[in-house]
Image: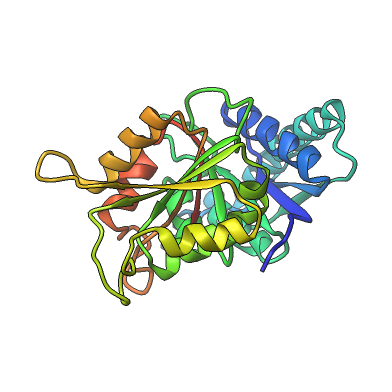
Length: 283
């Protein structure tokens, strides 16, 4: 189990949202005194090659790749400058010649935490396929911190909400978040529509995970919520997180990658689409 983060990676590209997540990553690198890796993808998506390329079509491929590398260099230089300004002691620039989702999942093998951006349908990034965050969540080996595309997040991890349902995915997210939770001013375990029993939330929903965290020195309390018929669980989580004043949400991410990467569970999809604070997820 992680007791601290030693290597953190952040996705950088030409998106205007990159600066926000690099600033967050830089602050976390300083907080945890960790090595920070800026990751840029320079590969073309598979759809670019559908049907094969020949003649003039094939001739433009090197130009596209050169353009992607130039934009990656610019984004990486910006992230390096931000890291230096914030006092990050160890920073590395890395370009991976794969499409973004694949590149980020490759880098995830060599870091404790991967920081990416929320999918923005209005983002115009050269040769980037949509739903990168969904792909990475379902295929990354470790936890992912997803930063909303709207807003600035100067302080993340001081007031944390854990959406707990007793699942393997939620447990992985909590275990991976322990370095943050130990430093938080306040942590709340929130249980929605709890099911009593050893195979679900336990005899006292939320109590077991709260006790586990308390042994790690986490200041934690528990809240329980019934959603009824007026609101779905995903929106209930987001609503309570806002009411609680959370600056970070920790939860499991659910999906069925063996069928299709886009087939996320309803709660996960709602949170990914409507988040207003950074979310630390694990699949």
